[in-house]
Amino acid sequence: MPVNFHDLIRTTAALALCAGVAVVTPCAAKEPKRQQAAANPAPAAENPGTGNVELVNPAEGGKITRRKGAQGIAILVNDEPITAYEIEQRASFIALQSGGGGADFKAKAEARWKSIVQDPKTNERFKQLLEKNKVQTQEEARALQTKYIKELQGNMVAQLKKEARAGAVSGSKAKAEQELIEEKIKLQEARKQNAVTEDADVDKIITGIAERNKMNLEQFGKHMQGMGVDINTMKARFRAEMSWREVVRKRFGHLIAITERDVDDFVATTVVADDNVELQVQRITLPLPSAVDQSVIAQRIAEADALAQRFQGCGSMAEIASAAGARHEDLGLRKPTTIPEPTRSLLLNATEGSLLPASVSAGGIELWALCGRKSAGGQDMSRREAAGNELRQKEFDVLAQKHLKDLRQDAAIEIR
Figure 1: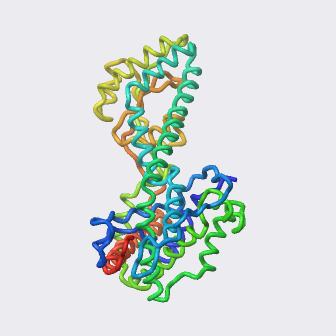
Figure 2: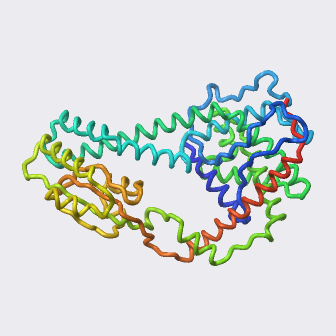
Figure 3: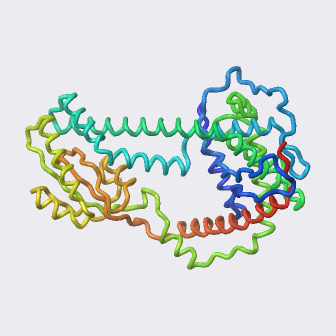
């Protein structure tokens, strides 16, 4: 049964907002008092979101095998042990999480897709497809183009996921060690502040995740075990982060002050969701004759490519069209839902002032330019409240990371 592990991200984020503090990512540490095994220990890796887990086939036999010596002590943090088994399990969990998704994956996908659409070979391959399929009508050309783009996107996503997973596996052990060191320090401080999260509260969070995936806690634990990860690994992470959040709230909650001016500035510079944005677009259309074949379409696409070479921003669109005898339209602000695919997705992922590759439409061969974006919904109260919460989260992040860095600097860490 597929498990929606994005629930983990949403759950962690929601908990952080309720408490008024952020789930803290580990920060770089100074040299500890006790000499570590490595002369220059690696900085703490960014704590990956607990939600980006893509299910893989369960481990053979559905069992977690403990290697000989797995219970041996690998690290001491203020004389408290971290075992090799804990490191092994956390490394497996981190690798499992790295199947794709999240902000980094989205940014990589956008950058990769931009390079694909700007590659002249992309259009050349489409022209070859037109010839190979002996396209005779505009409808056939549009259908072929849509299929072509979907295949390009599917191949790109599959490749990015493969690269992400390979990178995660190779670097997961070092990240696991740093995570566990940070969490040990957080829990030690939580015990001093009488702020350790109870087992029942942790189980409540895990049970909620299981139920959203149509399982009970026992079934969810077996499912995780089938993928080679002990559910206690997940519980340990939640306990550490929930306890640390309470520590930070007690210590720094009174120091956070967000002004209306801060909220105004943040809202003004925040990119809104696709359904709340309008796109400022212009379009050049090279009409096609009523009777066309693939050679005519290919010729018109080549003419459109030549026009694209003369593009120097949205201000040049009218002049380019006039010189070529094409039709120019300043379409003003348009909701993305009014623009057909695949042009809509390309515009949403384009940068302002850029021109899309030539595309086939019912009206002919089109060149679309994205000239700007504008929030369609305005600055309503819900956006302002969300902005205020996010600003508080960022303030707590700064204070929490500084506190964790100080604690780690004073900690006695021995890597065996």
